[in-house]
Image (cartoon, rainbow over all chains, first blue to last red; front, side, top):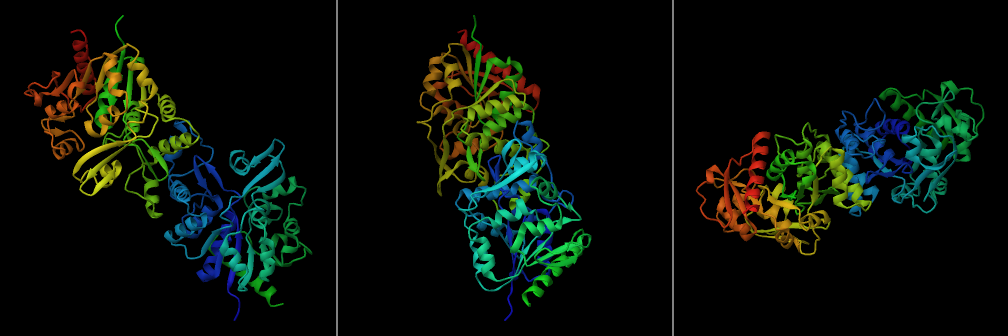
Amino acid sequence: MSKRLVVALSGGVGGAKLALGLSRVLPADELLVVANTGDDFEHLGLSISPDVDTLTYVLAGLDNPVTGWGRRDETWSFMDSIGELGGEDWFRLGDRDLALHVERTRRLRLGQTLSEVTSDICRRLGIGVRVVPMSDDRVRTRLRSDAGWIDFQDYFVRQQCRPVVHELTFDGATLARPQADIMAALRSGDVRAVIICPSNPFISIEPILAMSGMREAIKVSDAPVVAVSPIIGGQAVKGPTAKMMGELGLEASAAGVAARYGDLLDGFVVDHADAAIGKVGARITIAKTLMTSLHDRETLARVTLDAAEALASR
Amino acid sequence: MSKRLVVALSGGVGGAKLALGLSRVLPADELLVVANTGDDFEHLGLSISPDVDTLTYVLAGLDNPVTGWGRRDETWSFMDSIGELGGEDWFRLGDRDLALHVERTRRLRLGQTLSEVTSDICRRLGIGVRVVPMSDDRVRTRLRSDAGWIDFQDYFVRQQCRPVVHELTFDGATLARPQADIMAALRSGDVRAVIICPSNPFISIEPILAMSGMREAIKVSDAPVVAVSPIIGGQAVKGPTAKMMGELGLEASAAGVAARYGDLLDGFVVDHADAAIGKVGARITIAKTLMTSLHDRETLARVTLDAAEALASR
């Protein structure tokens, strides 16, 4: 009997596009989407999990197609009023989005895990595939800039990625236990592919890989690991990936991404713009990786799964 | 030199109308509005102070004239979304109103007192007069009904005052320290009147009076105590006052309210509908007590202050 499970590692916007594509070409019980939680933070007394939420909204069809984050048909009365009261309004929380943070925070305080809350919310929003946070333990991405160490959301939202990044750290990652379903899947012998979605390697994927036992479990799964490049023709589709690569002394290119992932990768899907990528230590698949339509998402999902299939049958 | 301070004890909607009237006929530094906090509760992980909030919104001109609670120009996206997520939606929190609860909860968790938070929020909303919670300690009104003891908001909002009330208790009241500014004012020798706003005696005013030292401090202030009846012609303007009086075996009338306050009262302002009230142990003033316009609020405030003035000059 052939292997069934696909484990997809994802950050927010870019990763969620491919996760949506995968969710539409795979049976619901064959896909496990692992969400980065290094971006999680506490704000206004609320527990916020940006990548889990973006995945949730995208997979539920509730995402905001204009901003790429938050919910569609959003209203902003809460934010307006927080400003009046002297509260912090640099992190924009829409009224509908806020419900998720308030409800999650309430349940976490009651002792539920982030996995339990995420699972229940996905079920209520009609999401068939499983979305799991990378861990129920706390991991926090921090960045060393010219101004010293700063928290991720301070860098990403408040300072809009302006600081020059010299180093990243994932506080808590070595102590964090990877979420149980992820480890169970990877150890099941039933994983046909580990997909690394086109997310920022440094801030979306490496927090997942930094947890103790994670890289080993991927290796032990014996499944082909296929990444989709978040860089197209030297540019990031969205976000600071290319800028950050330059600051970290890496080549801001698809080849640079492959080099960063190193021998973790078996396959690497790059855009036609990067067809001349050359040898990178992983089997290259060339495809249209810019996902503007739902069709693009589904097609890239199929291409990525086919790349994994081809690697598995070597 | 004549005494300057007016201390007004208030619950929510009805009391806030008179508090607004007082705030418009008195210099800002001569009025201290004491808000009941027996109705406070935790909901969705948020600290909610309904009477403090109603007073805040009314005094800031932000109150909702249709509902009597919450904010004007409110939107309800949060509430809609909480419902989708399986959260509790029986207590209606508007998007703008929510900002106050989230910001207050955040500050309380940082160690600020309810007084500090209330003071700062009032300042930001441009409220000149002081609004203080009756205590920074926790007091919780509970009611004994046919179905046993229930929390106040369960009774008031979820069950819409349907249960028959046999008894009330104010958990924590005997241990709670009245807010320091209230005691300082009452002990200053500078109080010209203690006004009991036309709020429900049982659930809005008695929690304030139940705190240790409160009745004594009012007595020691030597200021005339004047209440405005919340009952007009045997009916409550709003809320369960009349119903509750019947259930507690009291006469549902202005006279019944005066009897309940007993010798605390020096003066009692009743509506023309209750002109035949007879002897109640306090000097009666007859006025229009139904406040439908801003002019009504100001006029009743003046009448009430005049009643206190007349009592003081006896």
